[in-house]
Amino acid sequence: MSRSGLGFAAVAAVLCLAGAGCSGGGANPGKGAGKKLGPVGVRVAAVEKRDVPLEIEAVGNVEAYASVAVKSRVAGQLMRVHVREGADVRRGDLLFEIDPAPFEEQVRSAEAALLRDRAAERQAAASIARVRAESANARAQAQRYMALFKEGVGAKEQADQYRTAAEAQEAQVKVQMAARESAQAAIAVDEARLEETQRELSYTKITAPMAGRAGFVGIKAGNLVRENDTAALVTILQVTPVFVTFAVPEKHLSAIRGAGQGLRVATSNDDVGTLEVIDNAVDASTGTIKLKARFENAARNLWPGQFTNVKLRLRTEAGALVFPEAALQTGPQGNYVWVEKGGVAEMRMLAVERMSNGWCVAAKGVNEGDRVVTAGQLRVTPGAKLDVLPEAARPEATGGR
Image (cartoon, rainbow, N blue to C red):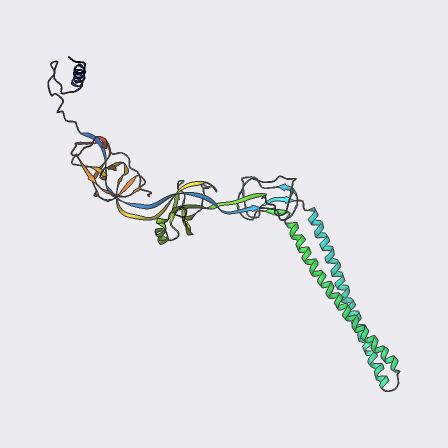
């Protein structure tokens, strides 16, 4: 026998020993070759009607509701730091104190200047009263001597002297009135300067402009601070409430605009907020529209700068036909499920509308009450006998995409 013939015989012998239908050695021919498999153990779940929400999933970024970079409005030495890093502050809480001594001196100087000019104004007022009296007396004398001159009793030179004196007194009244107006103007300047210095003195106590959470303190006591420095002394963020911004594909814009503001938005932390802002333009580079939702954030699960998964609920579809996603199979002709009917497997092609958190929403192909196979599909064939095992726990239809 040739070498190739020996090889073929060896392979045939191996196949014969491995196969249940090979004869020889006293074995019963065909025993087991036609043996039928027993029922296939599977789990099933009923197709049912449920109210399923239609939701859009996205990744959002948490933003503070308000942010204030606290800076000094005056220059000076920082004497005390009252705020604790990472602490909650209330509106009006004292945060920092700057050395007030230079500003107190400026206030005293402005007060002194105001007192001086007010005294000058009072002196000018008294001078006006005195000069007016003298002017009235000089005018009366001038009129009397002019009458005597007309009667031929007095000399013309003397009458001219009294008239000139009266005119000089009237001019002096005007001078004193101008001095008083000058003093009043100086008082107005002094009052403005005093108000400014008092305001600058108040700036030495830096208080919280709003309630929120303080960040890191950028400077320690003893250092010099500058007016409106580029670096903030501390930044305060309002974290209750907060905003979450996210972007969704522009294909959803019509549905979102149709539903309007106030749509429900939920995060992966189970925080629930409402849609407040729809951006005024679609981002042409990404084909998305940016949205902003507001969350009360009472438990402070959301933190500024954090990324979180969000679900925007457009509407809730009532009475949708659903079954567990585990039952869905995909073949060359599309999606299908195995349906248990009278203990026998039946392949059912179907159209799936969408997925919803572990559930399939069926457009057509199954009916309410159909029992679909959710586990054990790999051994199922058309017409196979099925052994239904106890039903496993089902997911809740609480979300979708």
